[in-house]
Amino acid sequence: MHNDPSLNDPTASHDPSASDGVRVSDGLRTSDGVSTTGGVSTTDGLRGSGDLSADLAEAARVLSTATDVTLLAHVNPDADALGSALALGLVLHRRGAVVRVSFGAPAEVPETLRDLDVAGLLVPASAVPAAPPVLVALDTGSVGRLGPLADRVSTAGVVVVLDHHVSNPGFGHVNVVDDRAEATALVVLRLLDVLGVELDEPVARCVYAGLVTDTRSFRHASATTHEVAARLLAAGVDAEAVARPLMDSHPFGYLGMLAKVLSRACLERDAAGGLGFVHAVVTLEDAAGLRPEEVESVVDLVRTTAEAEVAAVLKELRPSSWSVSLRAVSAVDVREVAQLLGGGGHRLAAGYTAHGPADEVLESLRAALETVTARS
Ligand code: 5GP
Ligand code: MN
Image (tube, rainbow, N blue to C red; front, side):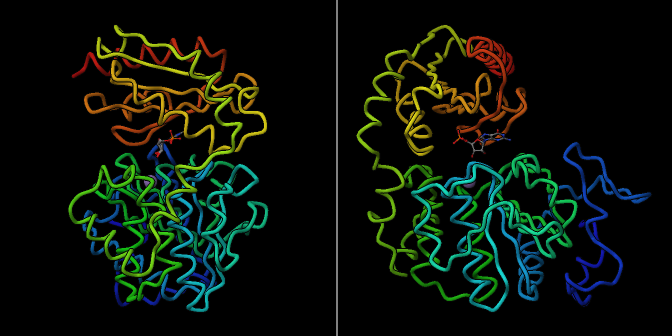
């Protein structure tokens, strides 16, 4: 059930910009699951209708009539978040809508993702309207992940959520959340198919960027998803040209940063319920002069430690403020660990934000790992 009954009615005219005095956002759910609707209970239907095809059709209906669409990726956007937003944004832009794509922070667009924006749709967070008529949140598992733009979820006319996080509470009016999709880009591609879009290279490239990243180069990809990849290649995507800048290209200074950070890495064989825990810390000093891309990729090396089921990298955001990346090989659900610490994510890749000295952050993380591994 959607919060706004009119969104379930296929006969209802739906002009999000219509000033009929009723704002569907009045029924929005807050992140703690409590409805903000005066007198109307919306405690059910958190995750859309439960019928993915119906939710997709609903999203397509909203977007095909929209004349002004704001697409938001999560903070510190990756290729899945921004690729998904740009793929859909490009299609809607070509159909004549006013389209802007943005994210709450940081101010800079990640260098490796800039080329995906062939139509100049990216705008700074400060250019996002105070009350966008139609807002689409992509790859964003919770309202908080929009960072400084989170308030737009309650000011927007209609909110469409396109995502693949199992923990997504369904914070939009229309929620297309497929936790079996390996990437949000796949959810977007299904939506494009419902919209009857013929794929071309710029759109397919955005989808491919999200897919290749979130599947770790198709290692976590079903047979059907490999078929999707074939379809994207057939649309003209140059796989190596997309993947190399995203995953395999760093300035020389990266090697020095790695040397410092990895030399301090620590293996705790008895931690994580005896399954092994490896961790590394990237301070602001380590990362000086490098891009977020270099810092984000550290976990991909740390996670290769054979003696550890769980890997963590603490990335210093500001003094004593950390973004923590968690990875598991197969046995530990790190999303549960991250959720205990205020974050979220997927079973084998999750994260959260923490404050305090690094050793205290690690101590809390060890404790959460014990809690989760003791459960299973
Ligand atoms: P990464 O380690 O690459 O930054 O994030 C891995 C996954 O964890 C992301 O896809 C995202 O789902 C989740 N994640 C990372 N940081 C946070 C956070 O601060 N809050 C929440 N809710 N999820 C996060
Ligand atoms: Mn994703």
